[in-house]
Amino acid sequence: MEPIEILRAHRRAKLEQLRRLGVDPYPARFPVDGRVSEVAARFAHQDAAQLEAAQPRVRVGGRVTAVRRHGKAAFLDLSDGDGKLQVYLRQDVLGEAGFALLETLDLGDFWGAEGVLFRTRTGELTVRAELVRVLAKALAPWPEKWHGLADRELRARQRYLDLYTNPDSRRVFLLRTRIIQEIRRFLDDRGFLEVETPMMHPIPGGATARPFVTHHNALDMTLYLRIAPELYLKRLVAGGFERVYEINRNFRNEGISTQHNPEFTMLEFYWAYASYEDLMELTEAMLIQVARAVLGSTRLLWGDRTLDLTPPWPRWSMREAVLRLSPIPPEDLNDRLGLERQAARLGVEGASALPTGKLLAEIFERVAEESLQDPTFITDFPADISPLAKRKAGEPELTERFELYLGGMEVANAFSELNDPDDQRARFEEQARRGGGVVDEDFLLCLEHGMPPTAGEGIGIDRLVMLFTNSHSIRDVILFPLLRPRET
Image 1: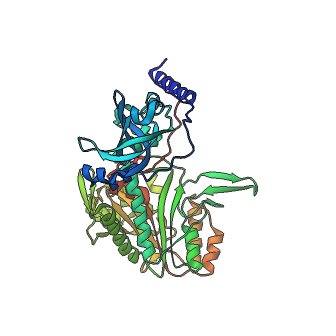
Image 2: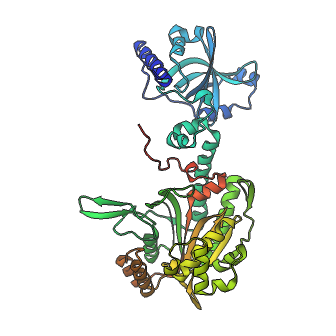
Image 3: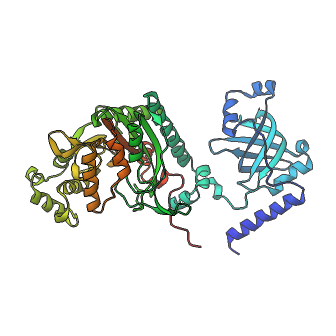
């Protein structure tokens, strides 16, 4: 028998022992006075004399992370993941039946205790137990000595173990929640309305990506999991909701990497009567406010460097970024053959068949992206890679669009929305001709009824959390990332 099987057998034997003693190893409830860490914090500043005088009674529950036996007495630690509280058990207080429960105890079990708080001779806050209860018997052994899980894939597969044994991982996900709360607070304070839009679409749209496909049996129709909520949110702007946002799950049936998960979280927001320039100011203010609220600083530790969010953030055109961050001569960016030559040199496949704007974007990705560490707005995106963005006045080959780069990653994409239905139809048709989407007739009908000038933006929440927590894999900031099935 394998060692793990022996450990499991021992635990199951203890489970049966509990049942023979008439103890329910999985009771329905155990009312408590608060989380273990909250109770510990509540009395942290009271010394032994104050506790002796007040005799505060508490009732707590948690996972057992340590046991120390001393004859007819014992100490155990109850943890909630954020903190722990010591419990003191004595046979003469609990009686033989209560004290005998220790014989069934394994690390990882959930126990409850009730009694009076005191401080031991070493000053540790402790519950003098007058009652103990088994709340859940753990049948699988926990990581040895609570050192945590070292295997990154195992941490993602068994996140429940990771959260209890790895304080850094727990901190990441607590910060993730706070980041989202602060974003909501920022937008709510500025009159934006949080909404929900469909997760299943009759046609894929809102972005260019391979969709996940499903089927609705009752209606006998093909549906696509949401690539982006953009076109539905713009319908709401046309309907009179002038400031809307959604923190949403998107699904793209594409590759997996340290920066990509097929299911990911986006913030998208739309602002009527504003332009992409207004969004640059709003984005700058929002991320600075979030950083100050969550981290207490506008400086982010990222690997071996510090990213400085101090405004104002640079605004470079895509062309300017290429020239600043690479040795490519300006004349090659003004000439179709020069673009093809540089793209081919950089390993872009089929460069001669790509639209001119796409060539520039491919070059930018290869020579400039990773160098954009401190926050930088990249503007003037080519129209042929921006099918939903308004053309730039006087330069119709460009659009009023920006992407925000931080830590060498794109974290936001925004533009002045295209609200001309004829121009939008032409761009949809051109995109479809190239195999990059379908014409959304319902959205075009919406535009024909009129949509005001609008600016819209998407911010990748997962990448933002990566940057705010110095996490270099998207798996480390998603509670349950997609993984290959484990071999049996």
